[in-house]
Image (cartoon, rainbow, N blue to C red; front, side, top):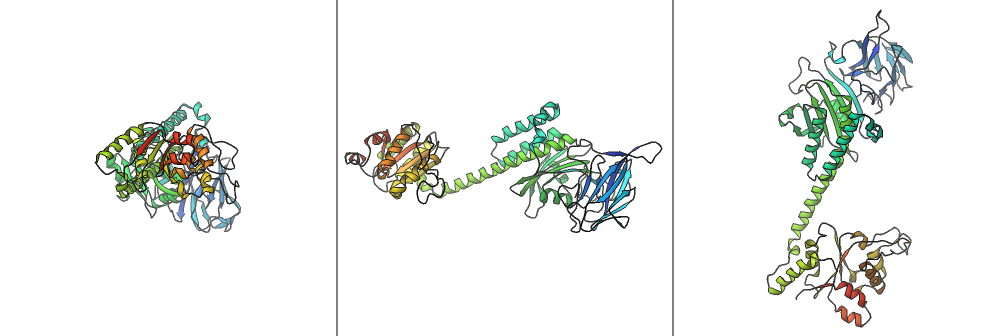
Length: 504
């Protein structure tokens, strides 16, 4: 597979000056594949630079021929004459059946690269208008999406009004997609904007099936779905090589009905973590796309890819959350309409709206964590994490590490940095069950956090500040613990700003 001209060119058809006529005329120079996997395909040559043929993805004419080298041959135009030279290939390059190191090409010359054969052609007419060619599809340009760099829209873009407008368009799209969580809406917004920007007749989004085929998912306008098709070779380039392509397609006689007519087409793959999610297609029934249309389609597709992956992940997480909620429905509801239960529910609602700590008291098994989750759901922090820990289940010598974190090497077995539960629950809520089992050192750190001070993880030299609402629970009498010196009195008063008692 190949492409037409250099990545930065803004011309649709590069012409070279013929030096063999009395009056110099402009001509198109191109290769026509006459033997190979894509027989009939035309590759227009750029006279302003080297045109490389080979299996490498950075070549201008990319082959799938196993007998060709990564860079097999190079074509250049010098003073109006086209020359081809072998690039040190493994199997050599031949012109008109003769193996060469370097040779001049004239109209009609046959070039063999590996097992693929081309005919060199020159014409004053556009390549797709030249008679005698069965397959009238010309690959104007292709570009690796993976290698696309931000330089396309750097500071220099602001000096060009059109590119500055494209830059603003991409920025506005990014902002709009940030608030979009539905995958279909993400695709539709992007397609509508791109279709308006490029003035395309048809814009489509195609899913990549398991067998690598691109199948229409959304087409604008909807009645144009049958026009969104690509040949198998171009689909190969889009899905497996990560190539954005731009093709010029002309209707020819005996074309099958399945190959709908379009004058120009752009296809950009959506690539994420080495796999193809799908592709964007743009079609013009009349006229030609501009280089600027191709240039803006690629970064827009990359933005769409990021937004689509995020939206899909959010939908998946919501579905998983709902599944877990349904599974645990019984534990997510406070059941009972007795007077003590109604009073508890009413107090939960009032306490949840406040900002202080909450101490939940009750016998073992009455559902203290259930009450804590009810507080969390009714609070302003309900959209942020709630973590739970049973202090009685943590070994006393590991309690500080689990709650406040540690640095690598701070004690035997500390093989890596560990963010404690307070750091993990930052901006959310932390439920400390059996809080009376905390060590005195741990109680001191907890008190500092509740007073708004930063704390120091084990082995750290930099203090950490967190914003966590603490809900504690106990089935013991903490006031008795205070009298016995097992629990800090000042911490007890900090934790019991609001008390919730669960009846047995």
